[in-house]
Length: 93
Image 1 (cartoon, rainbow, N blue to C red):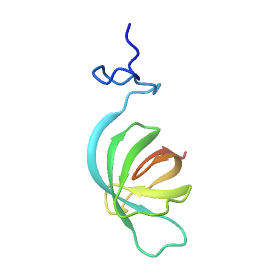
Image 2 (cartoon, helix red, strand yellow):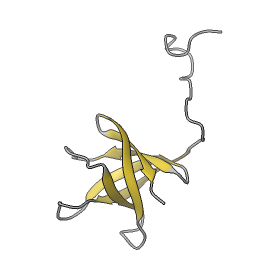
Image 3 (cartoon, rainbow, N blue to C red):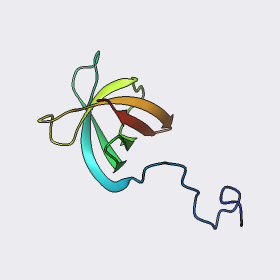
């Protein structure tokens, strides 16, 4: 079996224990210490977290709020990883 990490023609090996639903949906981020909100795009989501593409975001705090509906509802979130303008977040209970 070819090693998917060293073989660019092969599909990338999926390490997540839960499959995510691709949604590519606009959302808003709010966090303490900053006036206003930041636009972002949620690329994929589960009941436990999301993959998010940031727009014009230099600093990302560990804890933030995420909303898909202009803050009628809010998902309390925690930053798990970051790679450039892409971040992974876990939803808090």
